[in-house]
Image (cartoon, rainbow, N blue to C red; front, top):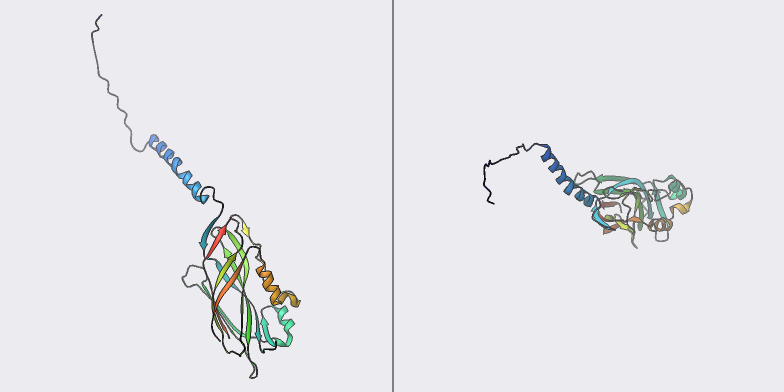
Length: 249
């Protein structure tokens, strides 16, 4: 049986909206949640399945204005000494000789962190006295903030001797961090934020050169080492903190 079209009518339906609508807002939120959270997770985790990494940071180093100075006045073992520790000064007795000291920290690039320490020490001598060698301890406060919050008290040791007496010694060096194990990535590490030299001790062993160096270099974590260049043969020192590579665990 044949079928005939009796009546037809076209139907046109249009939906209109503005760009500022709930549908647009919903689409924008979906797109943001799709791409932004994974990027944030990857950035904050420093990569996926990362176990160990390194980065470069300039430490915040400040001179603590603590010093221990020994001048060898003969080749047979005579000496003159001075320090900022009253216990040590009491122990040396008549060997105590108070020097003239100048210390200035400079921020060369104005970034809020000290870049250089200019330390000058002038030792008054009698007409018959000479200096054949020097030993100098300087203490510093050392801080890291960027990835690992690490604070410690550190030390610089300078030693020079000569078979002939000298009138002046100029030393130019860089402070470098000798790291033996990775730093923690969480919390504040103050394990070595203790005085390098026990200035309150009345015992001579607390100021013994060998004991101080052994205790300092036997730290399990980190210590500062000064790389020095002796340019002249006794009273001026220039020390520069520098960028260091830190390993984070």
